[in-house]
Image 1 (cartoon, helix red, strand yellow):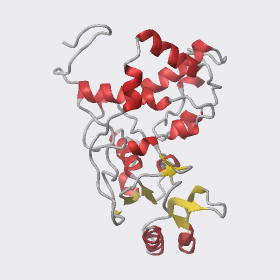
Image 2: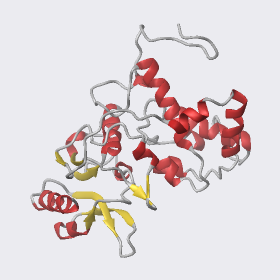
Image 3: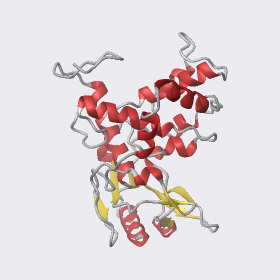
Image 4: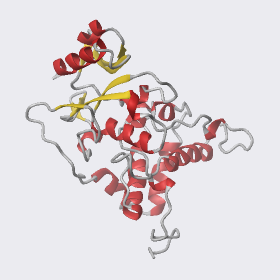
Length: 282
């Protein structure tokens, strides 16, 4: 499978189609790391398989004009499409080598994001690798983890999330790894007015995590990078998936599916349903 990745990257670089290629490489100890290559000879270092969990769109420079080739799984491809829809990325400078993702394992276990993946193929690509025996999937899977949280009472849910927010050390790894957190100035860094207290305490921790979740509402593609980067194990995925479900229910919008569709939070339609917290839909 990774031979096709190597051959395509090498061909694109040799022909001058791209200036660099972003993919994965496996080290001697078996661990996998993202790599950026510019020399066709380095294409032999490329790899794809278990451990390739990173969302490579995190390594795309949005404010650059470098012609970039990139290997994208389904969730990564949705990230690219979402960035294009938001006007942050020029598709013409990106050459996409898509791959029908078989689902990835880490430490011998299938990643939760792969178990919940609704589409394992990038929505947009220039060339596609389809490994033998891997079926193309395009359907939502029952989210038992989220359902279990939804069944709790409001007080129990509050206790659950505050327990996790209290662990937050405000390292901002979740923000820094997220390819959709691209604000030039993060709300946490603003001092006039100061929206988020710098001090690490339950109230400011909760505010930071909630405001980030709201900023990703209708945008998050469930790539799982924030969860993977969090050093204290806060289940950020649960908040993000809940908000994604709400946006899909009320606005019939799924992020990262088409660059032609205006993102839900940038659009207004008079026929949209309106609901006040604590009331029925109307």
